[in-house]
Structures are given as C-alpha cells and as structure tokens.
Picture 1: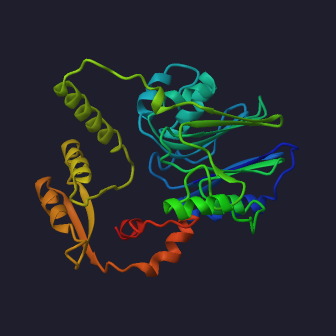
Picture 2: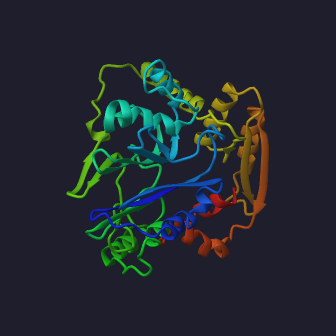
Picture 3: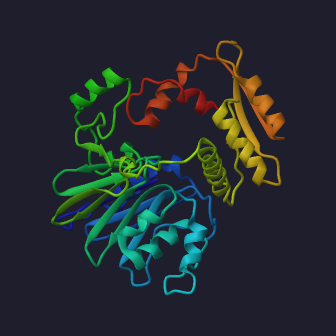
Length: 345
C-alpha cells in the first residue's frame, strides 16, 4: 500500500502522523515501511516483498534526490522495460519493478505510464516541478483514494490511511449512501465519506501549489476496433494473449499459488500456469457441506487434470461473524457477501 500528502502552503505533517498512515494499512505490506519527507510533502509505502526481496525497498529516489517514487502493485513487463534501459544513463541497478518506474520517469517524464503492463497505483514527487503525480492502472485493479481540503491533498491505498492524516470523524456523504442503497455498493468515484474520492481507473492526477489537473491516460472506449478477422483468428489471438498474461504473472521471488473454484476462469488460469511451470501449481479451494453452494468437486477434477498440489477445506456457509472484519477492510459498507468465502480461501 502507498500513502502520503502534498500541502500547497508547504506545511508538514508530524512524522508520527505520517508513520501512522502507514501503520493503519500494515496488513497490506507487513514486510517493510519506507517514507520520504520534505517540507509540505511525504510519500510512503508499506511493502509486501514479492520481487527483488533485498533490493526493492521503497521509496526509490533519483541520484540527484529530485524524484521520488512509490507504488502499490506489480509491473508485469518490468524485465522487458529494464532491458530497454540497459546501456543508457537510466539503467536499473536492482531487479525491482519499482526502480523501472523511476528510471523511465527520469528518461521520459510521466508519459512513460503508457508503456506499463501491470496493476498499479503510483505516486511520483518531482521536486524540480514541485509536483506530485498520482497514477492509477487502466481498469483500477489497485485502489487509490484522495482527499482535498483546499490546502492539502492526502492519498492512500485505503480510506483509513487517509483519515489518519487529520480526519478522525469525517461526515457521511448522503449521496453516496443513496447510491449504496440503490446498487448494494458505493460506486466510484464516491465513497461514504464526504470529500474522500477514488482516483478513477486509467486516470492521472498532477498536483502543484497552483492546483490540480486530472487527465485520462487510458480509455477502453478510445481503443480502435479491428474489423475483418475470422473467428479462428480472434480465438488464436485471445488464447495467445491469455497465455502470455499468465506467463508474465509467474515472475515472483516468493512462493505463489492460485485460487481454484473449478469454474472456467480459474481452471483455465491453472492450466496455463501448469504449461509454464516445472513444479506443480499450488491451488487452493474451499468447499461447503451444503450441496447448493459446493463446487469443490469441480476444483478437484481440474487440479487432478493439471497435476496441481491441491488444498481444500470445508467451511460453514454462514460466515456473518466475519462481517465486522470484512467491513473494516473494505472501509465502507458492501452488500455482496462473496468476498467472505474468498477471504476464507
């Protein structure tokens, strides 16, 4: 998770306050905390170490101390991007996917985001421009919340971290409540807290003392349609892209596995993982004693087909005792109980 702030008047939060923003989301990244602070600005990261365990400490800071980068997420094509930088003044010195962001920004400026294949929420402070950039991935896999009180913009991967910066009891957003009662969730950019908003997927925010500029750097509707292909050509391309997407996600310096429900999606992913791995895929599933909800037999069948090392546990369908915990981690009410079984997996 990431967190931080930018104060237009150059005022600074107390170091303990900034650290508490990180501690409030320590469950996202229990392995390490890193914070950069300067007058009127701070960027922090709670790290879950996955790539380059030794060399991936955040923030990453340029040699001249002018550029600071933190990210929550993973850049799946970071190896290819690092290779592109080899032999240039911007060559990477670690194997971290976050350093790739720093070096690309040094070389190309904020337009580099269009090269990224990944899921990410990124914060970049550029002291030369006295600007803070916030960037969210194309379809919003990684969350990023923002609050602007007119003087200070606070950002974080979870609302609870934003509140730690000085909003202990924010008023409820009644319009957001209306949407929640209509849709069973609070649709972005709203949250249930007045003034706390999502940075929308595919969007970029530039923050300076003069103001805030928000722009859309990727929009599915702007992707040009392709015509004239046969069904066989579409199938071939789809399968190739899906296979490559799974292959890229196997880049990891810690043990990993897959949720396996036995449905089409998860079974396909596990099958493609097995194609690219020498060791058996580790798969995980839960089952229910009530046959109306239980799909574990299909997961077992898929695991056997692809030679997976399968773990399955049975639980009671009634998991309402987990609701307070789930609501705490969702930061606001959510009417879909499906994340409770996912939590048990």
